Length: 414
Length: 107
Image (cartoon, rainbow over all chains, first blue to last red; front, side, top):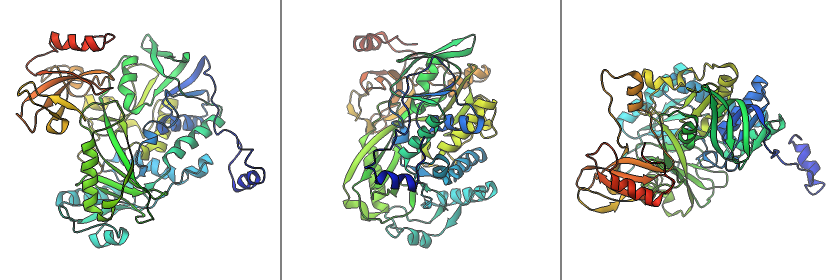
């Protein structure tokens, strides 16, 4: 792999950019790998990357049925934050956020991490109390967040309407080192680094079955033939239940559609991320100038990667109340992704009833922010059979009632 | 947008008039059951990509709960039927089979 640098740009500028090589190889699958990761999204590629970088395991294949980063990695609103209430969540999300800080240098690929600051608006007394509690929890967890008043919100976000027709802004939880990153670049950067370590990334290869013998994984059947492995990591977000069914167990997961959309590009007008959870919408401005908007999920099981129109209407209405300036913007694109929701709205990073199979799923509506931390923890779980970051996120927590309840913790958007 | 017909009042309406209620035909396990049964009753879901049996409530209509057979991969609704049954009736199964010959049946 040739390194990207200012010198490489200068060199290529002098020879008509004829020397750039492909960022990753696209090989045919081998017969056998030590570890197979199913799903070449951010989480799958990050898992493979840290397996190689931290644990020295490079006999790895990443199998993808579509194209690399074409699932939820390419469908989210790119927000990064770690202001969660519960300790296990804060630990893994903050690990992810801190890895994002120097991910561009680590991968030699510009992921455009922009810690521009993130506000979660408090618009009811309950929400204010909830967020203040989160700030206190974050202080104990060593995460830098603070509570600010409505005047400071207005100062940070001049386009906001703090008097609101329905819900005035009473203050906000501010995480200064939260922000956004370029979502595709995160997948591409990890893929390039994995490929450089000798790992095989195999796209357009759908898994059709999981072979097990005596309760132990043997390999997978794919549209490109049989592939054997010692360990199998299922990192397929919305399709986790489908893969689990192939392997012979069930997950506490339901797949639903979550939508996002962007406006036409306009001049820079908002340099922080704003989440308004009471009226239910969140918005940031991309580097291209588009207002990137997300809202709520559908309530019914869905694998179609398109959601219901009324969610677009509800969220846009809520954000027009909050930011009157956007009322005349045209909407440019809308899309949906299939998110894997657990009962406690926390992820599952766990061993499974089948020996050698691991799952990393249940990130639901907030997986992008967690990519580096999730991959780091998952790699440790696979390589060592145990990770302090994943201990609390096991499948057994549902049987034992040890929920990591973020669904009522008011630290999340959904 | 999803359209459903309420089998209780006969009205066909868009999804905004209904409230989804998750997987149908769950067998309830209460006190005295094994941990495994209780866990699977509360949390483990089939979540299939394809034919799904699910609960809906006609929230902004007659208010009654009913059941629907729907393809989660195409959003096609095969049938809606009354909730007072522990498994899908034969005519609903037949309707699904007619449209999805490869479907492995209700499990």
